Length: 358
Image (cartoon, rainbow, N blue to C red; front, side, top):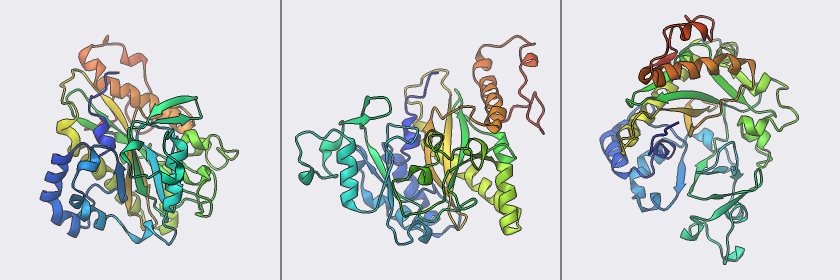
């Protein structure tokens, strides 16, 4: 697949994008401070990289003030560190004091020539170091990492944490789409295997909902097949909890708005080298806090398309096939009978209907 050259800008929405950020903030300061609607609703975040450290941090004070609700801090002062260049939950750590953070960075990355007692997380020497990857014995270059405020009081399903995975497509024409079933029944939630608690920050089966992490738990699939729930399951749960059918629709609306704003923030710079015939599917991850606010946690390139449950075996083939109809098939026209022999039916939708919504 021919990736967009600048797709990384979508994952670091504020990084390598100074002029765009300045323009957004200057034009929307009143919106950020006074509006009840979300802007780019992300938890308080510190991006650590060479480029970002050159940006005037005063630009972000309106965002910091706006995105620090009480449910993010209930007395534990927990933060989460995520390496920028890894996926599948690798390298993610939780901590609640600066010494623990220093230990995490020092122990996970090969720091040579610096004693641990003298090591500072603010040192530029931490960049372009190599990280030990115990999963495949590989060495990965550390291009940067983010430190994000951990949402200490998330909304829970049956006392367990979950996040929401949503797909978005950017085509060769720089048009972007959501998978249409997002607005109906066929989206999905990723759930944890164990009861939520802040007592043990090193228990990834409590705190990280990545399938690659959860499938290593002895309780994987104990509550839901593949630790996944459909949007219909989620809507039913909310209705039973609150006797209200509008909460689910409000959450979906917030997700949709956050995808649009994220894409618009980087659209003009996504393909600066003008590569032809690029397209890409992105995986947006969202979290709902106990006050039912929706937060964009991260955006992933090359999202996992593993058919790990009956739900995903239903959705993913149709999603990928409809993606190809919008991209590859528009350049290399298939035989007229081709799609008649390749149906991926989903109840409630016509087989010839493309489920990517522009």
